[in-house]
Length: 301
Image 1 (tube, rainbow, N blue to C red):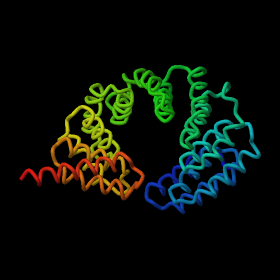
Image 2: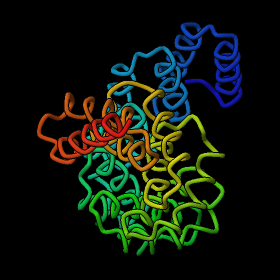
Image 3: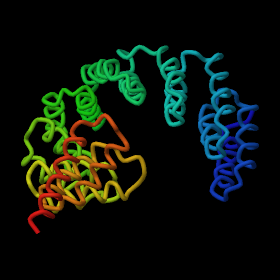
Image 4: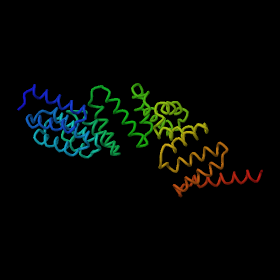
């Protein structure tokens, strides 16, 4: 068994190898520490991080699972493994690992379970866990994060009034973050409060112009508030940002062009929408309207 000084020396040596990018050397040293001191959890954590950097996830999970088989009451390692699994999108395994700890004993378990179920689109279960976390936790920054996830859950469940309440609770912490501004603009839009949505969606655009979804919602909001020039610009930015644009976006862009007296452009966008969604009745009607306007204009000339 290594004494404390030997462990410290070896852990520092392994860490230095990590910083130099010599990850296999670091793995060997961390393994040697574990072989001599099987209960030294910091070595397991450090080795798990190196395996993750290498992209060798399964050995890391197996190593920590084996530790837990021998030390099932070790909450620190169990929580570490759950976070490790969630980072690697292994949600069901994370849920199973967390199930061994009562949330009343460790309130953070409810937060992790809420997050894991949220990422699996299991919104009702996620809500229960986040609410449980809020009930049992001491005030800290994670409470605000839990409120933000509850807002996202309510948006996904189309409970926009509830989402607005949670977003208001988190405003003091998150109002300078692009995502919060996008979320509250989405909520205002769905509540029919279009003018309220203008400022936050504009702020989201300034804070993160690279985020594709911000352009989509900005376009939808500007369309509703009658700012057709800005709406067209934002819809085009959304389309230019990547593939798989929804038919409804082309339909709304076509609507913008009709209102901007550009029926030829509107006709083209309605046709794209119908290619993507042949059953789109709004696009079908819009195409007829655009075609009629074009024909009438030609006849008048």
